[in-house]
Figure 1 (cartoon, rainbow, N blue to C red):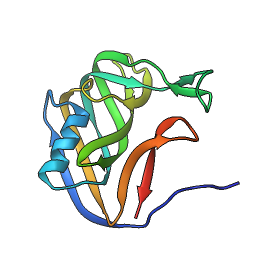
Figure 2: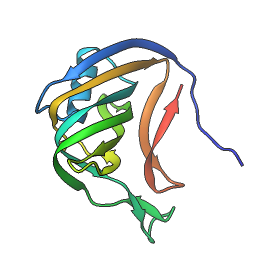
Figure 3: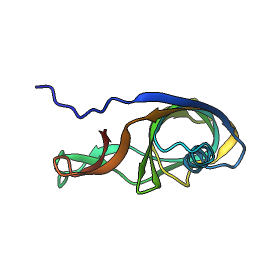
Length: 155
């Protein structure tokens, strides 16, 4: 069985930016989008963090799908930010960014997951590219089937 939800839009402007030291990753992406009047976008970036806060899926017997995000995990830096991707969504003019990252600590241990807003300040740089998506609304809404907040692209 194949099931999906989709909406066809088009690429808008491309914003290339650098987040400077001490700028939170998610808050920085939001501000770059605000300055450039971007409501919906795809983001790709890499760099370094002075610390990070992230979550990943863990088994949860009471969840509809048997899993959900666990507690926020924090790692003190320096943290090498190997790769990150996400979507910039907006609900009623409030940004809701869903972002995942692969990182490694000072010993080279690789880890990653869902980045938590307010926990992940830039150490030296985060180099980012933001590709605006036009003619589509990208929302994050509660999904009854999974019992979780999910991505919902609509026309």
